[in-house]
Image 1 (tube, rainbow, N blue to C red):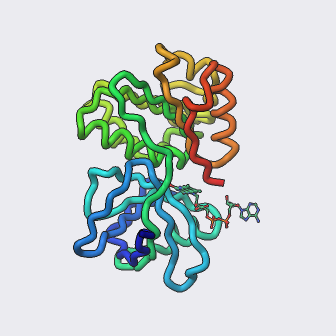
Image 2: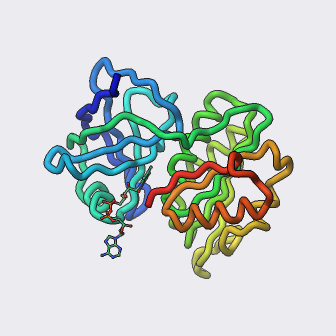
Length: 237
Ligand SMILES: Cc1cc2nc3c(=O)[nH]c(=O)nc-3n(C[C@H](O)[C@H](O)[C@H](O)COP(=O)(O)OP(=O)(O)OC[C@H]3O[C@@H](n4cnc5c(N)ncnc54)[C@H](O)[C@@H]3O)c2cc1C
């Protein structure tokens, strides 16, 4: 049976960064869908039903009663959402689909490569694993220009404290002297990823975001000797 498209109300809008907002869409009463952490929904405004866009869920399957998506101001839909969406607005939602799913097996290590807004589904991965106290290792390697561009910084740091199997590492490509950044500087490269690979056959790599970033990450991972089956990607276009 095809899944039903539902109209949902915007319950909250949270500003993560000046150009990035998390939009919480409230499920209608009695709605209790099955879906998986890491999937994406497709949304459209009631006045433009032919203009639909996909957004990865930044909430996880244990978050019930709503979906959350985290949107960057970019292009037509991204700009309309970030600049205009407000509490009480209605959006149509095509239910979650997608195969960008965390492999929550005890002996696996999930290495998640992200740049900019591509980190959004990894918040969901880390949330679910932490709340379920799963022993799956998850390492997020996150590239941003400056420290002020890190999305979900405080939540990732809290998850890191709560979950001994979760690591959140940031590299800044263009930190300014006033940032007082003491972490890694430079782009994500094969040598950096390699530092975290202790058992290649049991490592699963993930990359999400704009196509150039995902393709770049794919090339680095294959350089390390990983197979296609070990590389999961979500290309945003
Ligand atoms: C599975 C999936 C999940 C996604 N998840 C997320 C998510 O979690 N968060 C998120 O923010 N986005 C996500 N996206 C991207 C999202 O669907 C939209 O594509 C994005 O918000 C941009 O809106 P748009 O497609 O209407 O942009 P469009 O207006 O169609 O523009 C598309 C791209 O072209 C660029 N562009 C437009 N006009 C010009 C021009 N004249 N010159 C140069 N460049 C131009 C825009 O900057 C943009 O990057 C996801 C995409 C997919 C496929």
